[in-house]
Image (cartoon, rainbow, N blue to C red; front, top):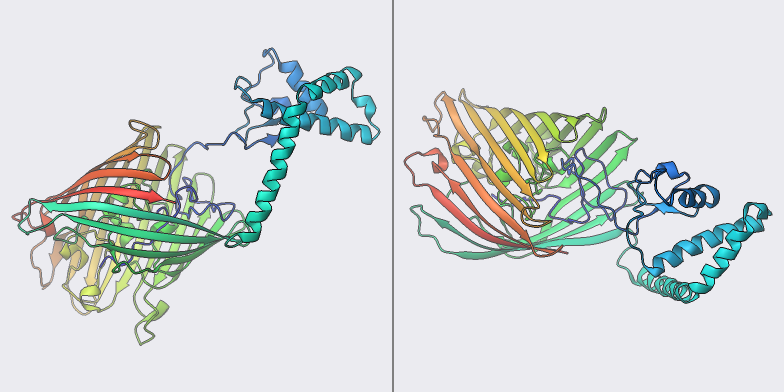
Length: 529
């Protein structure tokens, strides 16, 4: 039941950066597939050594004519062109600098002047400037020599790495999850379990704008609850043997179209904006605890083991159209299977981003599920009551039409509110039975709570449940509302390790109001490398 769980963010946190509207990373080192269409509108964080040349002092937005060094900076920028600024168009003139940094800047200006002299434009270099530079060169002679030595050493190390690297086009990233979990307050005899999952993701780029992802998964994390609801994002059991967990290729067409071409185990959130900043983790183990907590169940409808195609078309900075088609498992080439002859799901979505802090989306999914016994399921990844997942009993061929509305509002850098609501109309193809399935939720996220990199989250909502049945279905009574309450706090020990304790409270399990509530507890430890 929980075989899939492919997705991106669990792949490479540093590598996968997903903007509020999906744009492919520029290099293979940026495997954030994707999705961070996903919806994380964040301010870029530039490293101190990421500098870019400027041609006019007016390009530096933190330099004013009233600054005491304005004239000197203007001369160096516009006369000699040897001053660089940061990618966010700042100079950061009040920041302290090392003697090595000063030596590097001095060397850049000296090289420019040498070029001017060689080009017979010595009149552009003033005699007093040369005298000043000569004195500075003598003063920083030791630093310049050290800098040249360090450059030579880096060149040697780079040559050695290039000669022995795994691949010139492929990078490896991974995630390992250890979790201590248990189920409480239900009528089953449960025990505390210690489970885990590991992922290895190979990300390759052949043009600098495309991205090929091949991921291997291994784990022994079975679901600890007694229902289909409340599955953790890391639930995956392969007997600790590595299996293919996801394979997909991303590439652009022009500047406005991004194409998603999956060959195995695709997810809608691989490329569609799910409008769930901070909580969406793409089935990884760094954000929300459960699949339901990550984003709307409408993105868990009709997930396939086979392939398909998807695309995002950015009409403008505010409007994006997404569309995709997933086919059935093509490993069985018999009649009624394959990409076009059997099960399928088709999605269309309009995403509207009126401001950097507000996102809205309307989603439609049409899907067909063939007769596959207990494997027939409208919703995947462990969301929904038993009736919500199989409204007409195990194995009944079903066609569905689903509608969803999602929204997000980033009230501040430390508080994000997400909400969704959805409705699925399910019809039995071999009979007259019809079911109305509902789901909705509200999520609150508190980034950097306590310290930078931490995350607190609270999700309250109803997992997919049958709100009404027509016909002679095996389950004649509609479900009671199956409430899901989830709270967690991710404490980041460093850039590679985080610990997340959390609790999930499920009321009316399986839509049965007279059943004991279920409480799931976990302490999740995630390692990224």
